[in-house]
Amino acid sequence: MQRVESKKKVSMYTIFIPKEDGTYIVTNTLSGAIVHIDDKIYIEELSKIMQNCDELIYNKNNNMHKHFYDSGLFVDDDVDEYSMVLYHHERGVVRDNGLRLTLLTTRQCNFRCSYCYEDFRDDFMTDETYENILKYLEKSLKDKLHKSVTISLFGGEPFLEFNKVLNFLKQAKYVCEKYGIPFTSNATTNFALLTKERFMALAEVNCNFYQVTVDGFAKTHDIRRMYRCGSGSFDRIIKNLLDAKQCDYDFKIAIRTNFDGDVANDIEEFYCYLKENFDDSRFSIIPYPVSKMGGKNDDALDVLTRDQSIEVLSVANQIAVKLGINNTIHETYSSPFSGVCYASKHNNHVVDCDGTIMKCTLVLDDDFNKVGCLKNDGNIDIDHKKHCKWTNRDSMLGSKCKSCDILPVCFGKGCPLHVIKGEEHSCDRELLRYNFINRIKSLVI
Image 1: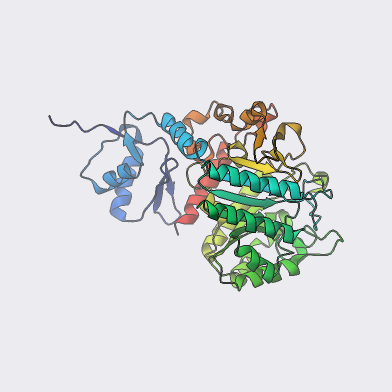
Image 2: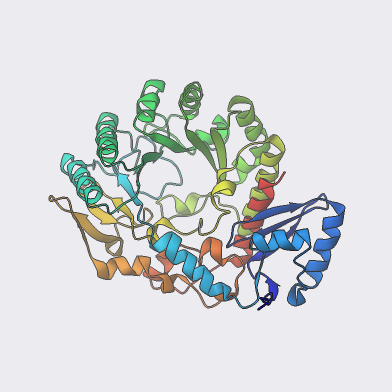
């Protein structure tokens, strides 16, 4: 019996993106496919497809049609694509058993950044908490509960007690190697304390990714990211970054720039400076608008409007592409489910100094954020009534998500905090879609 070829349709998650040079990018937010159409014949063919998306006449002998089908840009007509998104989210996110722990090694910081939202106090991770984390790793890996372990260092400034942190990472790496489990570590740090010797020591224990904030040149950075004593930090950070560049290790450093109007004014000149001094594939950039996050200085912050932020992000993207600078945001948030918030994942936990288990680093001291605690016997005691509110898939999705073409990337914007607070689901789809398209454009030069 001859098999009947099923009817095909353009996937609801396929997006056609015109470029300024007349070529096109075709991408699919569920499959992750990105296809650049730059040949005149194929552009004409694509034009026909775009004009007849609702009545696709599929030709299996057409190379473009076949490639689009193989890439997930076309799908079988009987596929329920929304159900496929839920299915892949279940497989790739919900059932992921990689353990990711974010450690608040301290609630103190050597900086006093103007826009910081944290309330600082002299709390440091206790020896007991470090020991209980290691006990948990030993027990859970012995029981084969996790296929990988990632430790993220956060604060405050996570390296205020450098030797304690380094010693812990050595022991965590040893436990993972003992059971043949991949171990990696990363840090969100101001980098002021990371001398070349310290950076190399961290590399030896698989701490290989850093996010470091530099808010433009010294004239803007030093009045936004100053030491506790009030002096500027630009020169020290740049020196340490240049020293790190001299190391032969395989690492990644993302230089984040939080921009307001003054920082944005110099963004092109600053990126040229970064290109000149950090023209190295291990370095990348993250442009991000300053926002009011609940800090004590919120009223004094000069934040850009939504439209102004979009414009600056667009300019920053164009500059980065022109200069050939890696853009971490574009690399990270353009693949399926890459925009899903860490707090909504069941194997992602934030560990406070005293062993309290939390989900989100933005609301550290709110009771609803405290979902459990580390026990002395190597177990984690979870309050499932609280935890399920963070991880419940249905609570993340708004009524318009089902028909949205970027749902597979953000999965309902990803962050569950608004739901936890009892707020209505909110989504600036225009902004999210605009940012996504710009990310894809930056990948195809």
